[in-house]
Structures are given as structure tokens and as C-alpha cells.
Length: 122
Image (cartoon, rainbow, N blue to C red; front, side, top):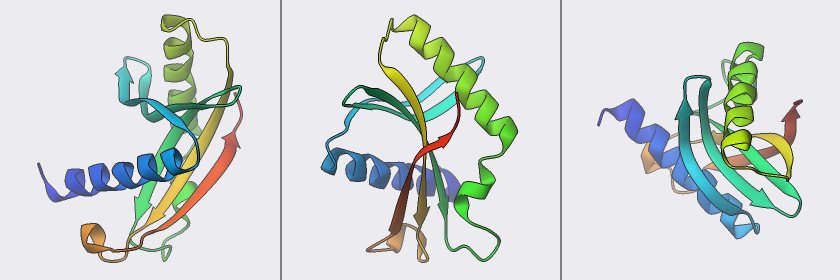
């Protein structure tokens, strides 16, 4: 693996741990289809949650959530629609963004994590 990919996996691992500690059941990671990809698919209560994880060292060039562009949102929504049909899911879909700030990369002991629920509309 390369450094950027390692950092991405590290960030997603932190996001999964964060979600599980808050009662989410992680169903799938890195779901890919022709329509796009979804970093994490989880459920909690009456929601099926599609999570986009954005990791940055800092917010010097903008908040991490700002990098979830409209085009990226459309791809995530299309992939989620495909997943919902394929999995016959009746739960209410929700799209979350998790910002992870890790100043020392994978050496960051306590990354800052912000979980933005319902970050974009279906």
C-alpha cells in the first residue's frame, strides 16, 4: 500500500470505532459499484446511514466536509440507491460526513473527529 491509501484506511478504522462506540452497527465498508462508492454503511435505530469519511491533517485549506462536493454527493446517493435496492432495505436513508483531523498522520494519537449527521439530502 502507499502512504495515502494507508492513511485513508487508518482514518476509516477510526471512523468505524467512533460509530461503534456510539451504538452504530457497521454493515459494510468500502462498498463499490458502477455508480460510485461508499466508505461506511451502518445502521442505528430506524436509519441506514451512508457515511463519507474525509481525513485531513488540518483545516488550513478548508474544512474536510467542504471536499464532499455536490458531484461527490450525487455519486454517493446513486451508490446508496443501488445498495438499497440490492439489499431490500426499508430503513430511512441518511447521509453523514465524518471529518477526521490527524496532524501527525497515522502517528496521531488523538485525532479530532466530527460526525455530521444528515450532511446532505437524498
